[in-house]
Length: 358
Image (cartoon, rainbow, N blue to C red; front, side, top):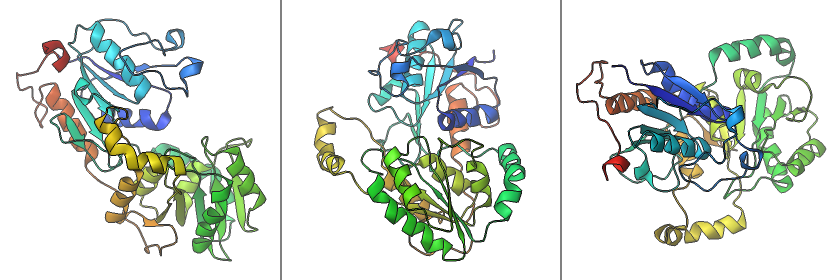
């Protein structure tokens, strides 16, 4: 009997793309359940447990039986819904999560974590290099066509500066902007073009500082601007990219395309610098969980020749990242469902979870 599989998705495009990447090559039918969240929880973090109290059920796909054999999900809010689904199934549904739950890793049958996650050694942990997201070729082609005339007219080299936002333990504010622009100038020189694009997380103070200090050879796009977003076209056409180190998704998409990439490492926020020093003690006390280590992710990119620290010379070309994380993830998920590497049923499809066996 073919297992019933749900992909439980939230409101983050980059997160959803990773689950969808698995679904596309899993070789088994996958049903999608998209969730919308109540306004207070779209940014606010609900207490993590098996619950739908944060879900806007009227705006979401229905979560009703028959319950799935397996759920693949990502992110705090969808993961809470996945735990709720398993509870409704009487503990039968198996759970796969991409990323990392901050606590209680044993609640999931498989945790797939890329290089930025600090995860322990455990039978249900799969470590991969890059997240599974990538810029879709069809969307890149459409952006290439739409922006070709505009970008072709700009003086080369075209250096694209992609700006994210503050994320613990890093800060990105108006004081960071001069160093950001200096990093872009390193690669553009006096003759090239700097094209800056901000994101939803870029603070208004940083946007204002970018606008006030914009070099003569630069253009600026912000998410508040009217008109189409040039992000994919810039990713496609850049001669070099400078990306703030907070944005794993932008770094990953650039690396998978083989773009010449420099990472601007954001300065530490003083408060989080203190917390970082206390983290081992706080983890032992159970007061904090497994966190991201963006520095470890940057080091993975450096070690595999996909990036350099901002200010360092760029290689003449960069290899497109072709790590086998997707293949490994699919193999582990199929094994959970009782299939071997060739797609044959082993006849030993497990049922239930650790929770239901206790």
